[in-house]
Amino acid sequence: MRIEGTALSADIAMITGDKEKPTHFRYDVFVRGGGAQVLAMKMESLSEERNFAQRYGDNSVLVAWFVDKDYKDVILPNTKDLEVIITKTQIAKPGAKNATITGSGITTRYKGTLVDSSVPEVSESNTFNHDTSNSMRSLSFQLMDRALYQLRMTKAGAILRATTAEDALKVLLTAKSISLDIDDSCKPQGVEMVPADTALKADGTANIREHVIIRPDVSLFDLAGYIQKFCGGIYNNGIGQYYKDKTWFVFPLFDNSRAGTADRTLTIIRVPADSMPDIDNSYTLRGNHLFVLATDEAISIDQSDHNQLNDGNSVIYPTATGVMSKMMPADDSVGFASESDVMGRVSVESRPDGLNNASFNVQTATDNTAAVLSKLARASQQMMQFGWAYSDPSLLYPGMPTRVLYNKNGVIETMQGTLIGGDSFTEMATPGMATEHYQTKTALTVLVAKAPDKRA
Image 1 (cartoon, one colour):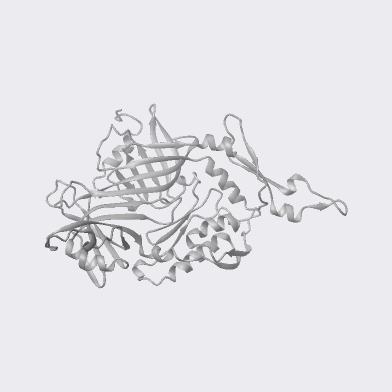
Image 2: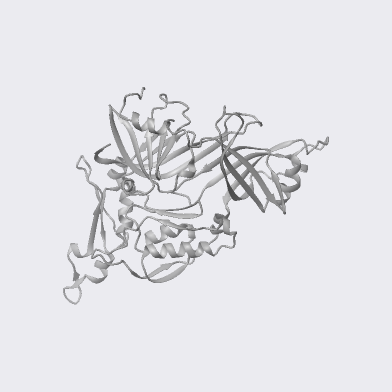
């Protein structure tokens, strides 16, 4: 399919015309253990799984080649206490004279776990001796941010008085994070949180809770979800909590309205895979707003219709306040109350076919409208995944408000939602130990909903 002359041509030209954005990098890998440090001969690949909706931090695997002697003398004896250091440096594109360094390097330190730590004397043949200084082996490391390595063992138990649910989450995430016994260069720096939907009461006053009680067995990674469910709630559209770039990100998972107001957004320009193959100028920045060409195959999974028909697009439930304080005694043995006093009802948008399904929740009485609305909001989401070639995933952040633009019969259609994933794979641009260039591909996963009656 040709894209020239379509409504998206100007957007595509804006992106491909930016020749300054980095697309190729050099990677240097070091491993420390037992007071010694060794340099990898070559990084083979780096896989980074980022699931902002279901995980709490990156899940990364590094594959690199090491001199056999370095493996046996430094890495293998210290498998329980290894640090992996990766330096990423921008370089010129292939074809330029030499691999000229064009940008400063970014160094990241990880807690490294050797995936295969077999003992050479057991796993290798002893029928002959070989020179370990001139032989190499491929090693795989599971990588974890050094702060996350400690935070995963941190509990969030606390009792806070006279505070909001939002402030309770910020205080506990900050206090637990800055107390880590870790180098300042790796220590968490703060919390970036989308303002809470429950910050104010209906009358406009602060929604102060007398107590916010966190059980002592609650993991710090589960803190946002716990407060969302059991402490009055924070967002009406689900909640995500993710640690990235020394920062805790807290955001609504299913809020599709933030792309027009957020300071940093992502716009994905959907281009058919056969129309622009292998375009390395695949993104640009306009201020803090990232524009990306999605030229690889796209995947769309829409179960919103199925979910709403089965789970409902509205819910009726008993309110805790109504049950506890508005039951009026009629005589000595019988109490009564009007339905409006003791029952709550919330709903999302009506279905266009008129088949609205209101379920009745009798499991528990609650005043946590945010949690009830979040369950309904989840059912209306459509998941889409786009391939971004020659990517720079460092420009993404958890819960990034996102627009998706695509051409439909000469008209630009718009969908908007939230970035919930950015799985990346970095590999050598050309095979061989002599190559200096690495390139990255990223799968962008977005929860979207069509913007009602809007076209760009």
